[in-house]
Image 1 (tube, rainbow, N blue to C red):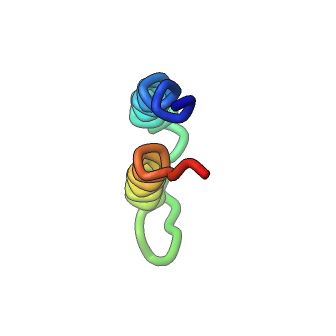
Image 2: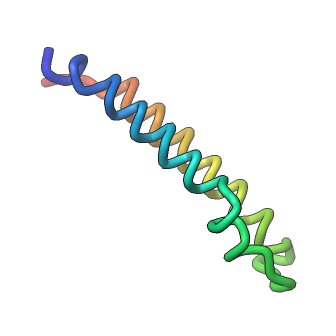
Length: 66
């Protein structure tokens, strides 16, 4: 029961973290002419942050209680 009560606030916190990660000041940190794995650093950051948010959201929603 405790997990279902905390699920909503955790998802809201994850949404706010996503808003922060995809906002201008943070994106400007990665907008450099550098490359990582042959890809522009900004693209690597965008897809890594997006992937991380999806994984965290799935972990919050699908977590089982013992």
